[in-house]
Image 1 (cartoon, rainbow, N blue to C red):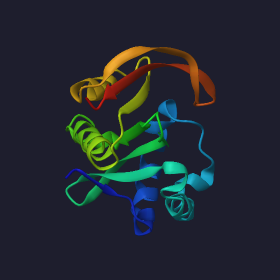
Image 2: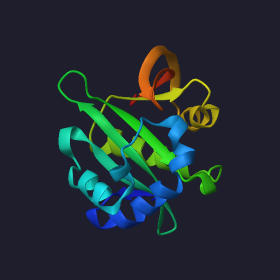
Image 3: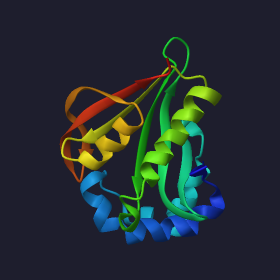
Length: 165
């Protein structure tokens, strides 16, 4: 398996990975406070695991953490849906780790959680991430203008979905 649940003891490795990728991730993520990149900041974030339906996973390269993939906004009842978001260490991009991680979360969401639908969004110009989703059977469903504040600006996103059936 290319993913495993993140654990509080991953905080040090995760903080180092985020710090090493800080500049790489900045154009793709919300603005992060300085404490986000510390062991304490990661420990606190990992301590909130499964809060509000969030499932946090490590993307693995062997035994090393190479990024994260999260399943969040899990809604039950008649919706049975969730959203995924992921990133891979800049030095490990292009190795198939993201594609494999998305496949693992799809299997978890559909087989173990019994969800009906998964959604993901990418920046319009993030073609690599769009390809990861397409390789995993996600279909493009539209453009969401000013969808998420990234690097301090409201940015358009291409939305994708995958249905369980």
